[in-house]
Amino acid sequence: METLKGHPLYPFFWPDSVAVIGASSKPGKVGYAIMSNLILGAEGQLGGGFRGHVYPVNPSGEDIFRQRTYKKVGDIIGKVDLAIVAIPAAGVEQVLDECAGKGIRAAVLITSGFSESGEQGRERERRIVEKARARGMRLLGPNCIGVINTSNRLNTTFAKKAPPRGPISFVSQSGAICTSVIEYSAGEYMGFANFVSIGNKSDLEDSDIIEYYAKDPSTKCISIYMEAAKDGRRFYETLKKKVVPVKPVVVLKAGRTAAGARAASSHTGALAGSDTAYSAAIHESGAIRAVTMLELFDFSRALAYQPPVMGDGIAIVSNAGGPAVIAADVAHDIGLPLSTLSKDTLEAIGSVCPPTWSRGNPVDIIGDSDLDRYQRVLEILVAAPEVHGVITIVGPQAVMPLEDVAHMIVDVSRTTQKPFTASFVGVVGQPSEDYLDQHGIPEMEVPERPVRAMKALHHRGLYLRRRKFA
Image (cartoon, rainbow, N blue to C red; front, side, top):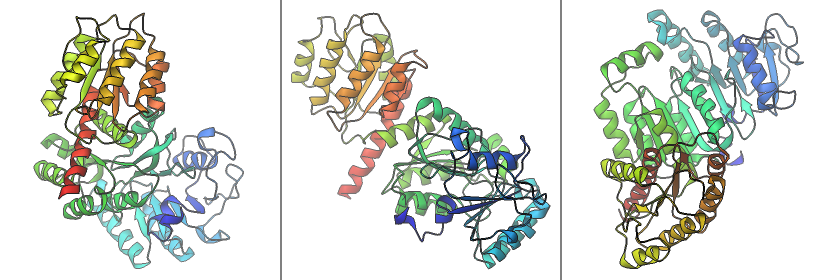
């Protein structure tokens, strides 16, 4: 990408050539999975993967995926932009020396057995970082699964799938979280621009990655899973000054409890630090904190695909009274302000609803509602100046086919810059859900989740409004 050329991290995302050190022709090996993802890609056939050159490196010298294999990095003819290292830890130091000699300035260390494994591993990690920096080389990892850039089909990981292309860029301290997000994204039409598994953060850390994402035109929302920041002050300053002003950021900070902090330390060698301090830093920077993985998904989807809420007042509209009450309770609990509907708005809704409608917000249009009633009420709410976002809740019933409702909601949403979230209550894996997700309206099967997703959009809008008038 031309706008990012010259950035120190450019070779990790836009290499013209990749060397896979530890490439394998044996299914079940990490080096095989990486080669498969690079050469075959999501399409699973030759030519379906990365568009650049891929150089397998293995002492056996046997061809892998019809690619000529080199016994050593130095044997490769031509320039190499990025090295993927997937060999035992004891051999990494020597391989990095060979990479530096070849002029490679970016390396992803898939290998584990470093600072997460004890004192000997910490010393080994210290040495490779010292050597890399002396040679002008940047390192991602070790103990990570690699990098994905969906724009150029670059997948240096050993994940089973690749995420669909879209506007979210993700960085995770946990490789397992990365693979879980990839699995989830495929079914929810949750698209990604970039994925980075950062591992032990021996050299590159969260601050480096999110600063790059802030400059990436393909990225509309940045999502982070972290157990600890290597440099907490730098992370806070980067968020506050360089990233959040231009891109919304969602942070799932794990290790909130003593038990979680101990688990984080054994996982990646992270020292989790004070959770209170992290919460304060995330809040003060303008980012939003997720507490669960579902919140990470829901907040990120909403912020990536929907506009922010640019006022105080959300409408909930539903043909199902119970779920609407639940949604109202959750909105109150999390501080999402609901609109006080004006007399004009109430009269307009009353003109298309039976006398038994709720006459307030949530707008319960009654369970016998047909598609026309739901659409007319939505149009009234979208036009109301006191409404700045709409949460649509639908209880399945015979007189209003869900696919028709989904199409209608998308059509109405296109007439406004006000954000929409949705719940088709209890409905999972249906075409109606898929249609909403495909068209950028986050849809969830329970009413609590679209309320929380709207809260993320309200948080972003409040940040932007305060910044405008600061």
